[in-house]
Length: 516
Image (cartoon, rainbow, N blue to C red; front, side, top):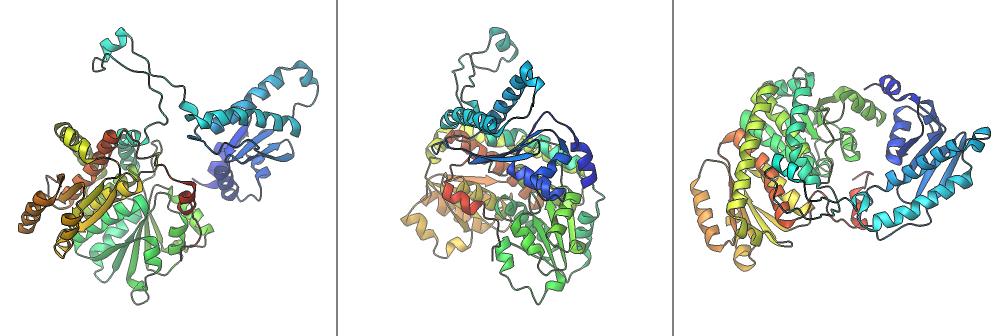
């Protein structure tokens, strides 16, 4: 969306406005402003509140700007959800009371700094207790449904105990909303968009080109998936790298023939911007970001836009929440699957829906039939081994990433044949608690031999096998992987999209400076 259109949408009279610092900074940069006070050009109000975490807030009150410090910070908070809403509610309440005061109407309706500080202190006193318990949802209770309701929803059991949850189950929400988000993304995708078709044409017609797929975190999985299906289908020179790995690689001899395919949810993370400022022929960015907005952002970061091609799956659905990526893996994988297989978006959507329902039933039945064994196998702090080959590497990357980054298990991965070069001693001397074996439908003699060995020395051998071969089989297992992790979360009774990270770890997670 252009700056002009965005301004037209936002500009109007407001009762009051509450922004967090990240949004406020984005708007200042987006509209070319120099400071927060210029935001009043679009937000026509006397009161703008900008929150900067729990430490302080900035208040634009009339033509004055105040910075208010929080002197009552709770360092033992369990869940900060709802803190900002509660703060804003206090200012809304005080404004309403002020306007109802007939004496005030005769005088100045603006707050003084002292009055603003008093409201802030009262809000923080209440927030202190809120975050120490269970956030904004601490008092939500699920009570026993009425007989009338049970008559309609006859699949609900008779006894419903009172539940006080710490958080909305973000992983559950991500799985339940996946079909809706996939449909929105695919139906909004422009099949005639030049970037996707240009990439496909490059791959098919230019045998001298080299390709590197780049992604980190959740984006590394569609990166690995794309590398695998492109190589399977076209036999081109293609590999995967993490952003830092790519930046440390000398590409001087082949940069004129090098096309990079970057996977990034935002499309403009610092590490992606840094590598886009490097040397290559073309860069294709597969992202959820709006194409026009991303081009503006990259141009502001001095990226040569003439070499950039954007494959956007921007959609109208709700944003995925939580640390684990589900939509951010499946949607770009489907977009690339569609391009490689030369299918239209309706066919890919139909394929996804069919596979999603099939894999959902498959994984649910597996966990029901093996519930007792799986509950023993998947205990917190266990050790997991994953066995993979070239075709199942994207699924290994997905499972390993989700297992390790949520902190539930330690995980070791083994390429199947490489396992025979002495790595088997770890299973004999220091046995893992679960062995996950990934395979497509086709059996090989080596698969049979390795499975015989694992059945002797393994404790809980789980075989995740696709019903199909080739690219469709890889996609099938990738969908299964999301549902498999969700079933593990139910066994552990833990929302894996909400890991318990320390403040120290978040410092390196939020690192946004140069990486080499």
